[in-house]
Image (cartoon, rainbow, N blue to C red; front, side, top):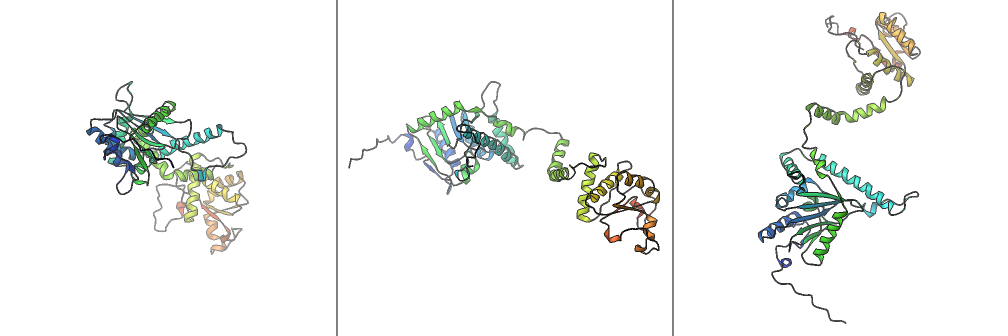
Length: 401
């Protein structure tokens, strides 16, 4: 058995032996990465060894993570943030299929998809930020370091994205003599810096530190500039109140609009306008819920056509309809309408007087061809005539259907 060689000893004053240098961080019991980085940067400043640069490699980023380190990073001359696409976990990696391109094109396609997911994830995380003073302050601090203070000057926080391959590495490199690095599993996010169970180790000696610095510089040169500021700038943009109002309406009723578009997308033989189609859709929706609906648009807005389109949809389902209207409209407007759109077989049209005198309703004549309980829909034109006996006869509108 060969005798084990002794490792060379370090001088007691070497930075790697300082008790303030973080060595093992797992985010448990207060041993969090944000605290370790902040304490390390403060110690370096106290030792008059202010890092001229901090280099960060991460697969994801969020405002909350930046805010945890903002006080210390703002003291650094320059910060380089290298983003990358994290590979799909091997447990759910898609299998190769016939027709997939050969390598390296196949991997490039996967990387491209992962980069799109990164963009979507950053946007989604931005859209879920809370509306409070603390978040607003954090956003403004971030945008301050992402934008240069003068034309032609690089920003304090410079961002690039490595797009040649997946980037799974996470590292925080402190570019000053004795600054060292922290490398492990933590992304530059609030979860990675504080909440998640992670494992990060500190290194302060060459050749490890030098090799990691060279590795980062090489990837940085291959990476493309990335406009992270543009993702968050829109949160500070000013929008007209009316546009905000429309956006709120879309958030409230967007799903209904999609459902409406699906339901009324099919062609119909009744010339209804877009707003009338919307009226048809909402009327049917109310019918399904309450088994009755009142259409009370102003004069000339096409209530007859809205009712006709609803009748047509019932006709398509072979469901009989009863139309009740004044005798004058029965023999003119509705007679022409039912004939023009071939509704005579599915729609029975009677006047108020005929309905009241039908033997099924206590009268002495037969006006309805079908039993009253067979009608799937009853349409009453000029419905304001069906009012409470005590109601005044003069009404502010007419023509309700």
